[in-house]
Every structure is written in C-alpha cells, then in structure tokens.
Image (cartoon, rainbow, N blue to C red; front, side, top):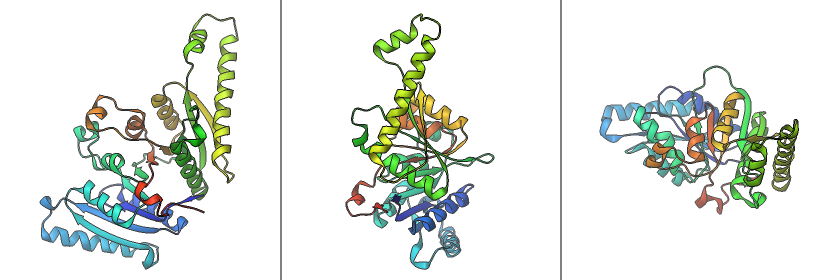
Length: 303
C-alpha cells in the first residue's frame, strides 16, 4: 500500500484553507507522515508588520495541530508564491502537495495561471487540489486509467494511479471506481454507426462494454498485490467529457489522474485531457505525477 511520508500543505488564510489543512492532517495521521504547513506571500505587497502577523498566525496554526512536534513544522516565505512553495517542497523532499483551489480572477482561471493550477503544472510530485464543495460529497474516489494501452500493466502512469487510489480508498474508507474511457474505432465504428438488425446494436455495445471492463480487471490483477474493493467502470465516449461527466454525476469527492497540465496558451485553446480534467471536474482533483528526484531516495514507500 502506497504511503506518503512528507506532506506539504499550502495555507493561505482564505476560504477553504482550513478544510485543506484538516485533510492534510488526517492524511499525516493515517500515514504517520511529517506535515509541513507553508504560507507564501508576495514580498512586494506585504509590509513588515503584515509579515510578522503572518508568521505569528501560522505558528499558532501549527501549534494547534494534533501531531507530535517531530511530525509538524511551518514556514512563511516571501516572493512569487509558486516558486517559493516549490522550493520548500524540494527542500523537504515532499512526496505530496495539498493546496486549496486558488482562482485569482477570470483570466487567470481561464489561462490556468492561478497558484493551484501552476502547482499542478510545475510540481514534480503528486499534487492534490482541494475544491470548496457545495453540500456533502459521497465518500467516493474515481481514478481514470488507460486500460486499453498494449502495455497497460507496464505503464508507470497506470501503476501510480492504481497504487495511490487504492491506498487512499482504504485509508479513507471510500468507495473506489476505476474508470476507462473507450469508443469504437475503425471498422467497428463503421459497423456500429450503420443500420443493423434489431437488437444487434445493443448486443455489440454490451459485448464491447464487457471486453473493456475485463481490461480494467486484468490491469488491476497485474499491478496490485493487495486486495482492494473497487468497481470497474468502462465509459464510452471522449475521455474528457466521459470522465468529467461521470465524476460529476456520481458526486465524487476526488478524481485521480496522471499526466502533464498544458501551459497557458494551450490551456486557453482547450488543452489536453489532463488539463480538461483538472479544470472541469467539480470534485477535488489529484494528479499522481511522481516525485522524480525523490523516488530513488525512498521517499515513496510501499507498506
């Protein structure tokens, strides 16, 4: 089971930061992990009094955490927030960053230039964006796999998604849905779109659904050695809309995926699947990119 050992949580004194901090504390307790609380302030807009107040407030927040002294720390840093947060993450060898969603204006959100999206784009470790939720969310985690690849069991992205999602579902007592978006291609697409005898269309769709469900089951058997209860869910359609629609319909608490988030220009033009999932899911999102520089040092342990 995947366990995080060094968790970095962003605390910004705005709405949603306390919920984000509580999630980070829960994870730290369940993983016996060290938790670092970071607040980044742009030095150009913060005077000395404000800086001192920020440091006192953060120390007060840290002192109230239900963790042993050896497992908690805090740091206030000044300058460009994304750069400073990533510097702290590198210094403490963080294997997970948790941040509240921080949208600073319409254009920043559209271009993906807000702090949370920039962290998702630039971080070298898994990054969890906590979104404020209206009403209760189901204790449900949805993980998006690419089970149709010829080398699906050897794909590192698939393996990261399965290891992290299965561990989180166990630790949090959450239901786990493993989804794979597919569609008919080539000759199959021509056949399914042609005029067919009554019942043939439904039969072909049911057969394809069963085949793609088996791809998910086979992938799980190849990757996970520990038993985990899950629901294998093939989704027919474009991966972007199919996965987001399913996560929103299920009122999921968390959507897990892997991949690089596009830069500002591509984000404005539509972006790739990862960018779309990060921007359009109503749930919190977790991108499972590895801590490349830390993995060899054993920061990510298998328990």
